[in-house]
Length: 274
Length: 293
Image (cartoon, each protein chain N blue to C red):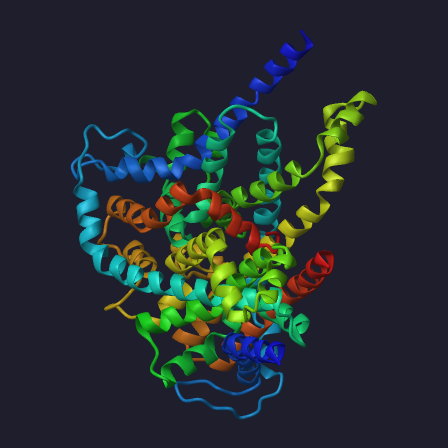
């Protein structure tokens, strides 16, 4: 009887939960519904109505405008994520298992780099990158790799530090050297951390705007910059902007839907709570 | 012998990363500080010593005062909103309801999206047009007979930043939810049971036992969200472009540096931002690393 009452009380929670879910999904609904309307049907006054049929006008037009920048983003994000995760793994391994003198000072110094406002390094950064001729997509890859070192190192360090030291000691007795231990013992069991870091770097590089707007021009704009310009222009109508937003969000959304668990772990690592 | 070899090898392998961080973070900060103390205005670098001139100019600059006010409004609404909402969502999800995973995914998905996409969509949701041109959320409120909610969003004088903060709450509250949920799961069930047996009400349990136990998480959320709000840039650009009523230090820095070529002034803004972030983050890093040992 009492248990039943408690259960009923709990079921009452579905009302606020569903209400909140609607709040979170509202922007998604507008993006999707608008995207699937035909040009004839699009009107700000009926933006909350469901589409009367399924049309692709908006997506086709948005894709025609955004395709080059979607490719720019892809070309930048894949190498940035791969290089970042390999560097992070190596750094994390060394910091966790081969403590050298000064490691306790170096690690917090690296961590701080994760939180700095990039406005405080932007002027030297632009001067430097221009001076060495590293602009466009290659420059962006380097920016994401270098400013990604703190988070990737942290994620791997925490993972490797959680592994028992005996694992290494046994290998050492068998005569394995540092690189041998890394390659044959740690690397094969690092897959989950690689997924976390790959997703994290993929998402943050794909979503970045500040470095993108500063290092690229209209020939190689990543999609965030292209979408923002599209939204700022008076000629491109709101419905195409909505469809474009969905196209720009789709890659990271798919990653989130497929690998949400790992995404969450990266998120918690980013607050030093991994 | 072998041990020494490994030691050298590990130093050699990690030094490129350390060097990169030293140069790209600390070297560039130093360089920015130098620029902020110069007279550099125009395309060509000019490192003539100007002392604290740029900082003093900012402190008496009306635009910078607007920036500080806007940052305070944004930070207040965004941080409090995200923490309260995140906590409530986490508590509801912690009750062991069916479908918890689906709700969690829904609350968290905005985190995967860029500020630019969020901004472009919310720009249309928060369309301030009135009368027959009404659209977005105002139209929704109007048709649901919730007229009192119809408002001018980010075009509201002074409090416009609060509307931008709503979009930011939409994006980030799932993150605080995830933090709190992880914290709630770590609290042993026996603790609640014991309190219940002692006759404590559910509200008392949360108020007296759970909330205090979650203090470290609330602190983390406060600091992480607080430092994010100091850096807010993309979201405002995508919702409203660069306009004075919604100006913040990051946008001022951008405009004065790259549009106005006033490099020394821009560098000073960047350094002030860095100092305000450092005040939050350095104690946080020290505290977290100490707790780890």
